[in-house]
Image (cartoon, rainbow, N blue to C red):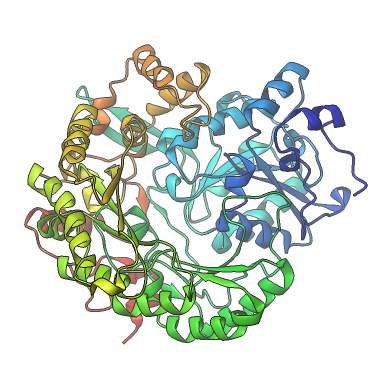
Length: 617
């Protein structure tokens, strides 16, 4: 590598994991920066190991670099040790590939996956030497954009981002880049470019919209203030997943990351309709990849990376129509003497999945994980989980018979309509699973079972049927957690739980409006960064931010909305209609289950995209 590094040897030797900052991974892309019409800094606002494990980043990196006129480079949040040095020495944030300062780029694009990374976004802008508020940035600064699931409610970040991209990057990014290239050649201003973006579907430029509020704090009006600003921003999707570009030579980090493996994306969307799940709604309709394409991609990925694990990812992998053919092929092709493992992170609890797990795991039986989400059948019907107690107990029994002894189950506390009886049912379900194990013949039971119950706290999200629902206050969350902890039989069951403060903040931001930007800014000024990391999270930073801004967090969390209220994200069109979501809320309150899209169409609105599962006979 002959490029000049931004960090000197003495700095690199003084920080943890210096390979985070070198940009010399296997399959890294280097281009002649002087020959590029467009330079794009793609930022994952968290540490390197997290960002490098995100498949969306890998897809966009590959997709943008396929263009001969564009150079996409990566930017991550520097760990606290390096950040301290950068601030002390006045070193600007840089991109990994060229090591050039982020300020030299045309675009700084954030992929926003989690609300608790928002202060890192502000910190990234500041470390890059740019004003945090978009109105204060200079003409020569990069254009700052953002996309990803959190930006389906863009308002909490509206004051910091120049434009948002709503949907899947492969769909419309080429149009934006072509527009920018022509605009740059004409030496147009940043404002002129933002105005031109108003003609492109899926683009939201916050400065061209005004928000007014009622005395009670609800939104009174959300109004375009530019004649070209669309009243509704429509999500952009790739309908033909089989032919969509996919990285065949992904980056191979030289240090351990969260996931050191190749990833096959089976499909996008989900047909299940769990009422708490934002991803299940915003990524509709389901669009599958052809199984032969996946086989080809698997061979290329293993050949080009040397990884020893293939992970099949999607929201509910066992719903992939070609799963049996694909897994059998992968086991035959890469198992045995090639020693490539297959992992399936999102299987449902049924016999078919267990058969596959048996084939995949062979002799080595690690833990098996299920996500019932709720302990009682009543509450599972409320959230439309589509899973019965019989399914769970049979699945656990089959797993025990298959040789597994460790079963992990994930639940949420604070789901709408939850009672203490529902919480008691979590403990009972754990005990019932233990008893399933002891139904096995004594000679088969080689060791004691390990049942692990884990709970998180329910956070209502935009574009779900529960977007109108109140979130439990902090005290109620903790009371429920303590109650469950006392109910769990600790002899054979381990209970994992945690503090609810981040869930409360997540709840504020997830359904926040434009005013929440003030809180995020104040928290960041107080020192909040890496809020998703328990060793860095300080609730006092946020508590002070609410006090300083005079914004009541409970307005955003514990309050029930009515159907007529203008929600901050109502101007985003994800295909699934508000009327459908409200109908699902009513069905939840009545305990009615809604069928899987594969079993019957409920006219959610996603059919308007003209393809995918909605059109399968």
